[in-house]
Length: 214
Length: 225
Image (cartoon, rainbow over all chains, first blue to last red; front, side, top):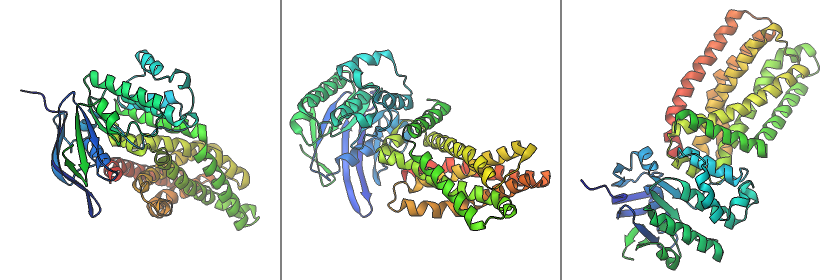
């Protein structure tokens, strides 16, 4: 029997109040695939990522993540990591403490093996600083480190290139490429097609809560 | 990850954040001190009257301050944009609630440890040899306030009028906790009967257990809306 796809949605719809933000989404992500998701603001990209992450329950339709029904939220969350807009770093914890907290709740230890990645991201010298003392670019690097360190096989990444300078964009691309090569499944929502397409093999476009041809 | 590790990790994070910023503790201690002073002035200079009212004054200050502490407990997550991330970790939300509860309870215990001697100093709370029972009253009463406070803080954290709603939701539910705590404290400081004290403490134990179980089970639904 073949392994289930990383994610599969059939006719998924969701509304906030009276307005439908997702309208009949059909989607399949194969294991190890990297997909870019484009679309204007308000088209439903972030909402779709939150549905796949087990954060929002669809009003209609069905979905599975690695074979687990979206309603089985704990199982879904064990396979997915969402790097969202509000990425949730605690400003009064240090970068290292933020990483340890996230990894601990993923059932992982802070190990020495992480040192190479942190060094590559230029974070070594900043690990002991409180997040509120870090620049926006460095905070993004902390988030990238968290993304790369958690052992979830499906990574949902919302606007990874927003508010980054050229160096940090380069670094983001490098980390995402490495995650792709390591066999993780990536779904990257972005406003910057040329960047996202550099690390993905397929593109999807959303408009008005629907997936349309890219 | 084991439930206890999750609970401990979340609580430790909250304590560390609180220690660094001292947001909640400073506000609650200051506010509680003000409540003590205002009620003290309102009741006049009679030492006897103040001593009679001391248990009520103490628990009024603790109850009001617990609302502030509960608000901060989830408000800090919201401000850091961390609430969604917290709900998406691969751990049962019940354990997250118990972690937040432990974090909040720890802060209330510190508040209780500061306020009780202050109240004794200002108004007189002579527990004498019955201080272990007074300590037990504080532990049980503050647990009740924390269980309810944390639960409703989570329910209201994404609402626009949360600051106004939270006390409106909390106070009617914690009436039994405040009543039992004031009665037990009062009996302990005026030499009341042990059996009466035990019955009020029993009420606190039952309340805490029922609400702890209910709030833990309902929390995942409350958090996800």
